[in-house]
Image (tube, rainbow, N blue to C red; front, top):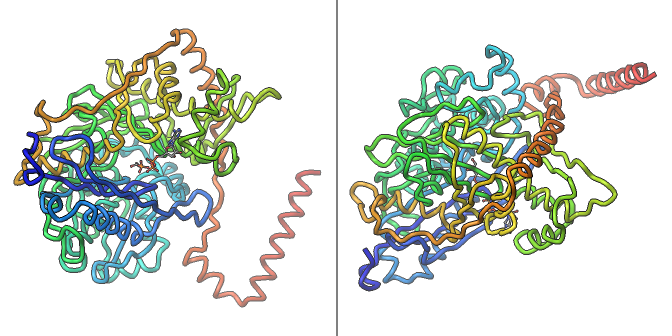
Length: 557
Ligand SMILES: Nc1ncnc2c1ncn2[C@@H]1O[C@H](COP(=O)(O)OP(=O)(O)O)[C@@H](O)[C@H]1O
Ligand SMILES: O=P(O)(O)OC[C@H](O)CO
């Protein structure tokens, strides 16, 4: 399949819109290494504790700039060989916009935002036995602020712009793939309002068996189907790049959520194969073939991919909210290191172990397999002997222990223990982390020595689409990703003793965050306050404050 010369080269472009960065890469058909790439950082705003927002326009501008820079750098001879495009993206992040103006109606609410905690509490209070998995037979997911439906609901309730657009029937919803595709294919001028099954499977609104919007869930959340995109496969022609973009007229034929995309990039095409991606968060996906395995141990059922008309392939997923973010926190908030990629490993290696320090980085609660939004971060086991090196090492071990939590759950759900773990993602470049992972989980860790496994998956899907057919995903002709293997050096007893201690640390992190009344200035609260004369409001507020302080003193005495 190798091209004879530059003229024969068939190229695939990929837009990779992650949480921290947007990039555009170009791959040669059936080759794992991209030939060109440009990356731009994305800003994340934190308007309140636990909130996380991004500007949808900034995402689009970054996509456009990355494409422009790569296209200009490649030169006309190679650019004309770009046959098609793929899109891969951060999942669950929720964008609502106006279809007549193309303007976002609010900032994007990012996947790890926990503003919908109280909505989740209300729903949990209503379902039998407060069962987190009450809806999983419909959508495969546990009740958690992580998923898009809760974010859509919040926007419908709190954003006046969204309310207005719903009334005028001009509101559209999309995850980041849909927002990019709609704009890329014309926007207000007939932009394609589509998503793919992998992204739809993270919204909490798609029926995991039928792969369409679930009428029961739409009714439950009171979300009109008219705002939702059409669900397509992960590999088919969706449309063509519109006039205002570089690569005008080129088709777009692959869309996958980024974790599913790296599963494909790692070629985990067979049932029983799994990969773990270490980035800001950490996501372990296990291919369960055409079978939907509903987890009874805290994992998520998700669509791994669907290639055109072929039946969907499913995966069990273990999602860890905080992996690399903990190291970034040690840099930015604690000042323990200067450069994440250069200093983390060397500092952690200055000590032989963590000195019995454990770090549970539950900054926004714990995802799989616990699904406890009341958990908060703890560092425990500190003594006068502990140093920042011990804590940095404990942050790395935390990622490995969280992965072991997921592996244990996966082994119970699937019955056959995983015999090796394929890994990728920026954080996996840390050799010590990979060795710790092998030692803590007791299985070989096989690292893909290629940075862009995530983008590679979307390139494969785009190239395989009917009508494009320049990448045969299952053929052995494709270049193999180079690998490096880390073998376990620990004994079962050592592993199990340390894991037991980790579980004790997790127990101590639970139940820390108590539900608090929202202090968001909602429309309702604004109306209520503005209907009171100003001085009356002040008198009542001061009165209430004085009364609460008096009661607190009484309680304390
Ligand atoms: N060598 C390293 N050791 C430990 N953590 C690292 C290392 N390199 C990067 N990281 C962490 O990995 C994450 C980078 O992942 P990246 O792919 O850039 O981000 P994202 O998932 O946010 O799109 C950051 O959170 C960073 O702290
Ligand atoms: O861009 P990442 O690596 O942070 O990906 C985030 C996941 O898709 C969230 O589910």
